[in-house]
Length: 256
Image (cartoon, rainbow, N blue to C red; front, side, top):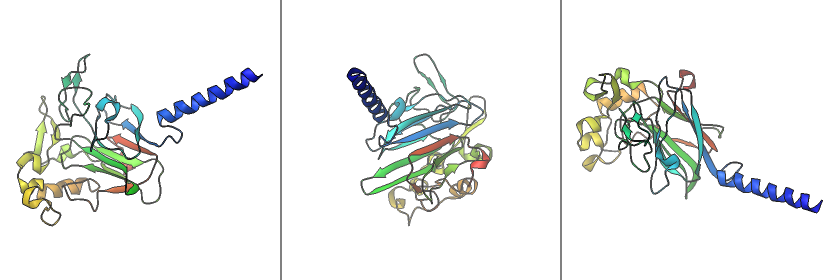
């Protein structure tokens, strides 16, 4: 009997250790759930910023309708973006029409090429337990994306650009794929450069950096996304949840 009791205690402790290591059951991590609601494959790119680790080796494939979930630690800061029109060989070498990160499946610390719709987040700071997240078009657009808490308290919002900017992209900002289709829409900074469009140099302040006509177009189509560098008032979300859902091509019913 004593041996059975000891075995039971050992198994219980082992299960607890496994649960804690995986981040589940109160292990202190935040779960990110990525869902592909698009009619085509998406290759999410991931990057830890400000010295934070990059989860999932920085990239993977999501077929239409697929989803995956993984944990990141409290305080994690990073970005997620869609890659479209990708083709990789068995060694993970290839390229993407938009969002490419150096011609590899697993970005592993490499940033994505513009244009790309970017989900940005900081899940707690030394000064605040709140989580901050947004969807940014500062680096352009290549696919609709949203980020929303699963649960969370009052005031937690949905960040996103849920419309397809590619169908209304100004011709000066279009990026076309090999078939001649519009694959992405560049930001004014990426298309034209210069301090005025990029909010750099003498324009690197909220007072001097003003939205351009192109930023107004982005904002009209995607009012909940950053359209230029200092577009905080209507674009930055604050929340505290244990799980967040990132959806590529979110359905219209998720708009709030």
